[in-house]
Length: 380
Ligand SMILES: Cc1ncc(COP(=O)(O)O)c(C=O)c1O
Image (tube, rainbow, N blue to C red; front, side):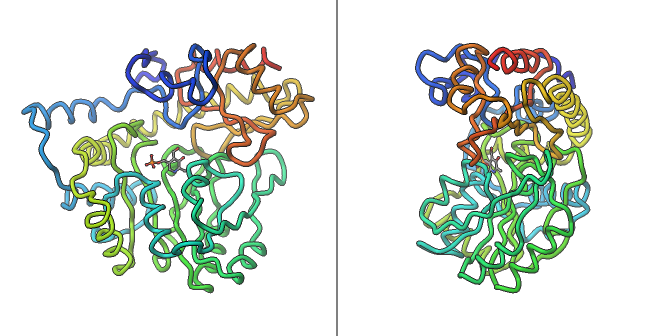
């Protein structure tokens, strides 16, 4: 795959390029965006060709996800990539990862119930956690790029009645890959207080360090939510999945999805891209990882220490969590300068819980990345 290839996405109703003004204000539609979490890379050829082939009859009737081909592609992917054994029966389709999280929280926590989550965190979590009593556990940056959680605080919150822990594994926005010992400790606490661990593993494939699925450690009190959409850059194709070992929770999840939310037929594009991506495109993910690693290295080389910026190589994701506390510039001023001087659209960190950071999406061709890096330098 030629990840250097530049493809003009403008005028395709894509959020990243066509709706910049929604996030960065009216009149700023001409910025170069490094914002929301998709990439500028074309999906693997196998997925594109497969979708064409399977749908060339032009009949877009109702489709099914509950079959061996779909579920086994997920089972096999977890085995191949994460050395994790899951059973086909545990796999359930869901329209999106956030839908799964929301539905599971509704079921296991209930209205006004207590949920533990880390700060900083993915803004999508913040939105769906609104109906709940949220216990935030701060991820502490012990040294640049080394984030640690606070197990005592987690235990305290469980004692106070938290029923679920929403974990981002690997973590958006810090890019942290959780160590096995850390995951073990979290799981021990979840089990001790008979709560549920929801592990969002959507960033599990784009990595620089070995990431561990919680299901390789334990299958009790655990639900994994995931999607191939970050891996193959296919979020607009729709679909995701949950892995729910507990039969009662799984059946309730399916009942709720089908009978209450009326989600029965998946998008055929989501089903096909999962099967084809997971069965045929492992090599592509390895190439993508090399490319993203080079992009991250370039950003570290060019920006770390530049006028006080703190830049590190994230363990995972194509998102770089860049600090500017020592840059003598206020968050509002920096954002203003990025827009007006640098002409780049980069997510301000306060959305995720730290105003002195920006989240820079490096999932793009090197030529575009250079524009982003120059934009950041210029604004400072
Ligand atoms: C951690 C995390 N979970 C979920 C999502 C969104 O997944 P979906 O579009 O399937 O809800 C994202 C997208 O940025 C994400 O970063």
